[in-house]
Amino acid sequence: MSVLDSLVGGIANGSIEVVDLTAPLSEKTPILQLPEPFGNTVPFTLTEISRYDDRGPAWYWNNISTGEHTGTHFDAPVHWVTGRDGSDVAQVSVSQLVAPAVVLDFAEQAGRDPDFLLEIDHVRDWERRNGPLPEGGWLLYRTGWDARSADAEAFLNADESGSHTPGMSVECARWLAEEAPVIGLGVETVGTDAGGAVGFDPPFPCHSFLLGANKYGLTQLQNLARLPVRGAVLIAGPLPITGGSGSPARVLALVER
Image (cartoon, rainbow, N blue to C red; front, side, top):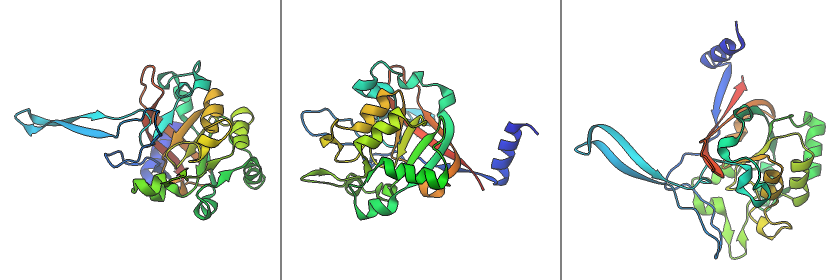
């Protein structure tokens, strides 16, 4: 039996589970809100063209309006000024859209402290217990934040001092970009950076360092709790938007059961 036959057979018989890591995309999908004078993306909208009526008697279809970085989405290097000479979303190698993934679970810590930051020592300790980060793979950072995704206010968790969502430290972001063997970072929050990262030096270090190193981001993931610590294969499907800085994406994981 070929490798692909084995894969298809495993999915059919349930020995390989396909786990959907994608948040549903609708008008209620939480979106990042930047303060003035910065521009903001528009919320997702669905506008009906026809629905089995005189505008089109046998078909139903819609126009959609959204930003590239809405819902579960893919960040390409050109999204950030440090990656301005890197790949746009259409230029990302398709071979990198299917890659191994590991899950670092810090949901307990983020549950106690919404401003929790992942540090290099956390990752090193994880590696001592679970083995090295995957070459050419993804680091998926679980914080339990997907449980808030149906409530935009709880998901963005903002007050007069700003947004309070977990992320990683400046030092950890730089290390992940410059020394770790992974191709990208996946998170459950609205962006790859912590809610308070606007005040870091540099601001938004995950964006600055990872995208500047021609690595990628995946945000607003769900169901990371259903993945093993290591062994899953991640499939990311952004739209190949020519010149695009990113795209909403369907993200799946293959897990042996």
